[in-house]
Length: 87
Figure 1 (tube, one colour):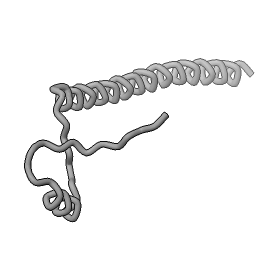
Figure 2 (cartoon, one colour):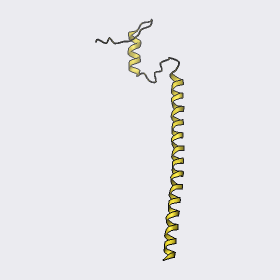
Figure 3 (cartoon, rainbow, N blue to C red):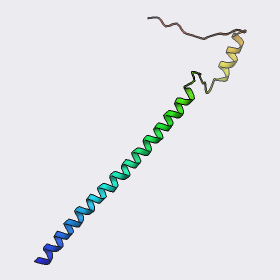
Figure 4 (cartoon, rainbow, N blue to C red):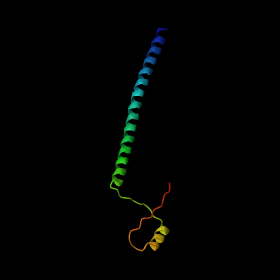
């Protein structure tokens, strides 16, 4: 009877210690993962802010038919295409 009691007591104590250690390591790994993700996000935000921070407008793609149509219509000078918005 004494052997079974000691065995159960040691097993419970070891499982409790193991669970606490596992929680500690999992929390530390999760914190490292979150910190890494936050750093990547911060770097991406800085990279994007640096690109568009000078006030320039960047157009990645203008369709070819729109370019040809616009080149025919405009005969020199600066032209700003706009739409009127009525309230």
